Length: 462
Image (cartoon, rainbow, N blue to C red; front, side, top):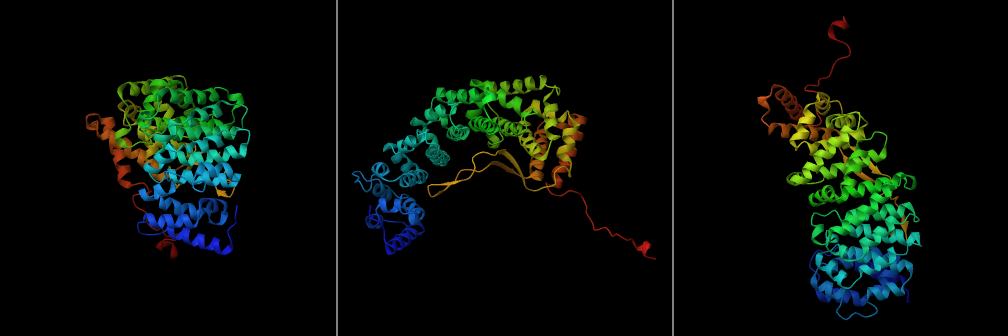
């Protein structure tokens, strides 16, 4: 294939950059003129201009005329992405896949065209190359980025990608990292509130079954993979429909999370499980979507009491207190969990029954950092392959603020308690007053009054 000269490369880079940052609306003529001057093979095979060119093509795809130009009804070899992927080098093929992923996120219209042309099949074909770990890692990284798109829940389940991810999760002979990534990608795909509009429940159950299958084989699963599996269950249950589905159709998975969340011997697994269990109870949802439908709520309540009864803590309040008495990362996860649970009357009463919990969430000195990080899983190391800057998360980090997390928990308890008319109960009224005072102080004010104190008083000078 003809190489671009230095002058042509500079010209393409300038034109692509102009397109990417053009402030107005691009008309069809300008789009066609750009692609006529610089065909896709040149764009894809020149590393120096690939990134800028992809941004330019994304800008082109923002209009219906641009979509028709990028994906013409009668495509030639120079514009057919399938043909280009089959003919170009492995480096060029990865860039084509990256272009498809970036275009997929532009709009639903572009995603629909990509799906109708079966361009998702190119990514699927790369994922199937499990004998080539590097190629599979590249494809999974791109698929992870695609799964984050708001259009993913509508179009990805219509392919065989979910079944393919399940086969990777089940395959004990593959690298642990491949299984971990396949898990989290499937969780991303299934985390949308409207997911059951586009996929049947049996497909979700199959993925959950594959994940539970790995979790029940502790001798063959390492810590990173275990934490990825836990996180994936949390992702699936982060939506209200997903949480209800988990409790009603896959209680085994919910029970595993609950038991791991309060097991102090689990280490990093406990932290991951606390966050995932927090997703089930509503920590990732808006306030009006925290509570589940009646049957699911009752199952959740019974599950937490059942877990508590099998421990030395005996009650849910004992479990919560044990978490808040651990290190800062565990406390952050505990604040997050309790903040969402106290909207349930039974849990509010459990929390209020333990003066130690109230003392912790109202203690101005309990948290001393404004920014804290609760590390969920140290998997997915950042790397660069085939000339691409990886967008894969190096760490799945739940960012929070120690002081704010405690304050939000205190505020949630106080708000829930205020809705119960605590004045009718002297004990609850006292707790409510203590919570109100802490809320008024705000998250950062450690003391009501703080003044400079002299090291030598006046009378000591003479």
